[in-house]
Image 1 (tube, one colour):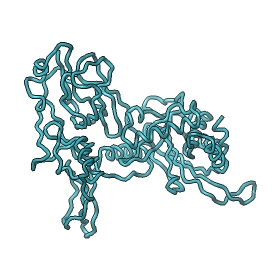
Image 2 (tube, rainbow, N blue to C red):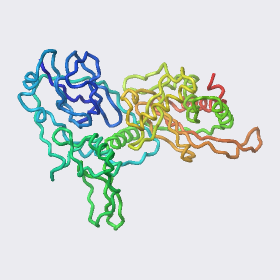
Image 3 (cartoon, rainbow, N blue to C red):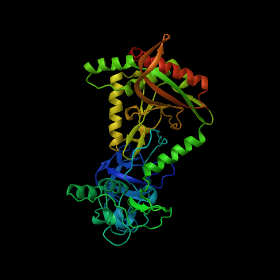
Image 4 (cartoon, helix red, strand yellow):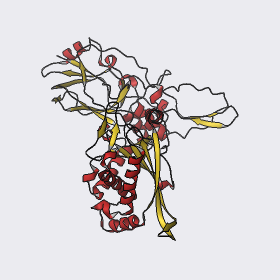
Amino acid sequence: MATILRMPEVLANATEAVLSQWMIAEGASFSAGDILAEVETEKALVDLPAETDGVLGRFLAQSGDSTIVGAPIAVIISAGETAADIDAALGGSSPAAAAVPVAAPAAVVPAAAVPVADVPVAAPAVAVAAVVVAAPAVAESVAPAGSSARLFASPIARKTAMNSGLDLSLLSGTGPGGRIVRRDVEAALAGGLAQPAAVPVAAVPVVAQPVAPAAAAASLPRADGTGYTAIPHTGMRRAIARRLTESKSQVPHFYLTADCRVDELMALRKRVNETSSVKISVNDFVVKAAAAAFADVPEANVTWTDTHMRLYDSVDISVAVATDGGLMTPVIRGIEGLSLSAVSSRISELAGQAKAGRLRQSDLEGGSFSITNLGMYGTTEFAAILNPPQSGILAVGQAQQQAVVINGELAVATVMRVTLSADHRAVDGALAARWLGAFKARIENPLSILV
């Protein structure tokens, strides 16, 4: 019999998600386990698998639409069933009235954002399955984008328009109920339709309040007459704020700092890059050195839970990547078994996916440790916030020449300062010091990283 496919709760406590794209065409058959659609969360893409065999009878939500959790997104039928069976499953209502996605709430309004300091945010683990319920849909009404009523557009459409300076009120939506979706924005931009950045408005008092979904960044005055720009929070920015607040307030951080002489590393990197087809960065050496340090001090490769400690067999490390929407921390898995060039290629691949918004949820899950590097920005030293549930994060500063004492004599060396933030519940001070000492030994003797 025809059944209703509903939007699953792809993240804990999520109220809605964006249907990024359908992977099965309308009218096509599929088998259990096939991916029906990609669902876009605050930070990644999640596959929506089929639980049983069937035929995708009718779309009730289109690619790019934002849909509340539990809302109907498609009708699934069995072979031989017809449009009459679909209408019966929908309770006799029209497709548009059956399941028009709702507009994004204020918390999910995208806006142009600047990458924050390198303090990672982890996405919670998630297992997603398609929710199929044989029940009639609840009708939702949506005002067309061209009317004087509230403007309806998917979050990804709003983000693209905001970043491109495009006024959504100038567009006519082609989504259900006149909703503006990503393809409408991309078509407008391809046609050269864009608007200049916001300019200051007349002086009016400002009171902190939720921002309406259609609001864009606007320049407004402070009480003392100085202007400022109000930029609505994106879903990713809210997720970053929530996770970092939880980490800093609930996890007992402590910090250890070490100065590493990296002249040999710089010389070895230069020689490697003269012959390697893959350009190796200092950060690639840092990641491999961290993995080698866990081989030297395996008891540090742990995370805390309320009932037990998890001691990991492999070394999975998150690497911080700055994107336009905020910081993301994809995980490089099994680093102990990867060559330096393989690590470099994997980091480049995941960084590219992060910046393009194509990371999978699985790319952000797991790992016991993170590395965040601000050396390329000229930062000498900083301390990072832990990436729960991981128990450590290494903040890497710029390698620069400075005076050092070697064997009682003053000399000049290239020094890179690193700061380890650790979860004191899982890693004691002496254990953290041993791990940092092992890292320092490896990074100062870079040939040991390669063997």
